[in-house]
Image (tube, rainbow, N blue to C red):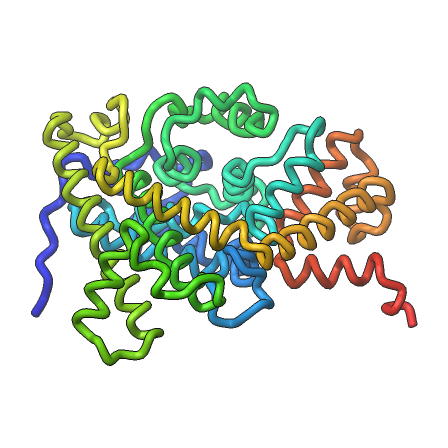
Length: 392
């Protein structure tokens, strides 16, 4: 039976009324402005590289664990579904979800932590800012402009999906955002669209669920250990009660599926409640609120906090994961320091660019090069640079 989606919400973004692109372009004959943005992201080099960038486990550790690419696809699927059910523009929500991790370096948060250390004194590093730089500058695919020339609404969502960011502009790592905004106002002190907020919540839903799945798959904890953990525990109990003779792997997947459904339902109920109480009647009303219109209920926030605490203790800080994080940070630190001291070992064009700049400029070239690497490429590049066996 076909599912009837609700009519367009009064506070949904309208692609026909988009504020346009920084560099004007003729409209597509076959796609809305937001769908065109989505396609540009999917075809970008940075998006393809996500297939071998760490989510929690380094990409070569197993074929079944999530990477940044599969994570982004899961976020996009949830964002599109939630946006459609709320009467929002599903293309815009999906687009922002697909783009949200384009700036992540190799080795996940370990890579980001190390680049922050190496870039201290050279303008810093922030993966959200790097994502914005990727879509506005670093991707080079078009003759008329750098970046992807995305719509105002997509750019706003990329940098503001977690909330207003005007208070971050005094951080060195956010200088690029201030420079861009001075020339193309993204209203950094307001909330982004409801679609962008949906993408942010979809990120939370996706990673908390797939990290539970991957954690059990990796043997870091067992399904039975989740029985008393808030949020996931009740769904493990109900899955076991409904299917007492089922394989443990299928039970795990069923429990995760149910948790996703519960979190999605909670977001939809809470968002409708907030929109009604706040008298939200337009996309502009969403931006002018002093809080997010899309969110979890207080009970869900409490349960989610407890689940995250469990994952932090049992997964993100597990000794096996810590060991990988330590190795990853050494790889990036050693490459960064070598490229800074010997820019002539960089690929020719990058080496010339790095050599022609001052120390801070050279550091940014090196940082951009490393941040764009996949896990596998970073490991191989490090091996070539530091292991003599490649010369034999």
